[in-house]
Image (cartoon, rainbow, N blue to C red):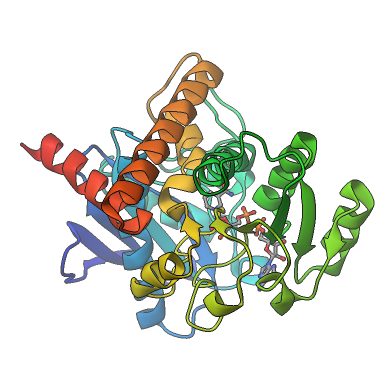
Length: 349
Ligand code: NAD
């Protein structure tokens, strides 16, 4: 196994990890440990090149610093990626090799489940490292974070809709949900339960058919979700979907969803604001999952109560962001970034 430091601008530590025998090539990035040990998931997917994988891990680990700080967790930001097709290349040897790489950082980085990984895979990593969360069993195991992520997104939709539309409930509103995966599906259940009407899309036709059958949702084609006649747009699939091409099409006046890195460019936040669309910053709206994982890392005895309190605190943070954004006439994203910077400056002082 070779763990080689990689030079990187604003990250504390970045490593290229290679174990030829195990077929492993990947990266671990620790963006910041100012608030505590870096925490963020392990992703496995096909990348066009090592450069693309490195770019991804740097971007995602930085995002975790923001997400953990916004959720007021005593955790910094980190992330790990493995290059390869999880359905073909993922083997116990490869996972164990990654586990050894994580262990070599002595707890400065905690890993967990992300795209291409499962709770069962976390158990394999745990045979080589103590610094893995999101496990299915064990003393403080937190399991699948998606239901908690969905709860946080639901809270964010309610909070943002209250600011933009003055409504106390989502009853009677229409929400366009992009992506009916782990989070999107749980989110639809919550929205339907509150009386919202659903417009949905997914590249997986079976999921769309399921949503139509389950909640009488209206199904639309992949690209038609942006122009759907909805009050709220909830992106729960992929990043960079708020961009110069899609924003002019949006008919919703509230955007709040689970996907990471929803704004393709920083100026897309201003594009939304200039169209009168209120945006719940993604790293605030989707913080529920890492809160659930944090309970395991921090060995919290009464996880449900602690997670519920943290979700309430996150909701209060979003309220403060939206209030300040309205008063200062700026986009919520820039206020959220400022709050994170202030929390980190206080911790560093
Ligand atoms: P998932 O893989 O279970 O679901 C994603 C869904 O989106 C799938 O059903 C997929 O078919 C669909 N999809 C992919 N591309 C699409 C497209 N172009 N248009 C429409 N649908 C498309 O993932 P998930 O766990 O539900 O997470 C959803 C998003 O939220 C991801 O961006 C993830 O990074 C982010 N997120 C998830 C969590 C969590 O707890 N799972 C936490 C924070 C952020």
